[in-house]
Image (cartoon, rainbow, N blue to C red; front, side, top):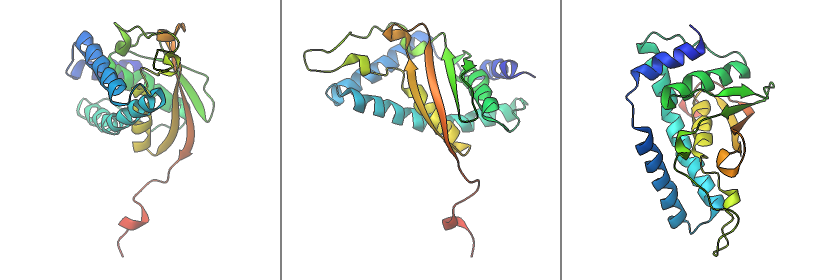
Length: 196
């Protein structure tokens, strides 16, 4: 079964939320962060990434459990390209109902291209700086995706850096997330957990 077909099977088995409600709820979260952090855009980007990381840590368990229960075979990835395909064609499909295109693949990095972004419907970002000095061009509205990817890959022993490098909300033609592999972590429990 292809990765796209696997993603479609898993998408069919996951409970759905209304896309508009999902987008509005996320918008409320971003608005609350703006108020809590006094429009400190770098801190808001960091908080969105942190929240996403916590979600990603749990998403990988859900993906692996649902694939096993539904007899969808996701073989171990032998290359970063295969990892990118699982994230783009299975992970994004299972949780958001969309697939991403993959590009710029090397042995240490890849990019995910999203033509649709369910988080950004109904959203318009202010241009430039506001009267409080917040530079809206620096806001990475959908930065939660970067955290989700980082958290999920961390659970399968891949330390990565993610960055939302292009955003339709800022006038780009596509949403692009850059993923850079920093380290493949050792498998197994740390030395603190070994029996004596």
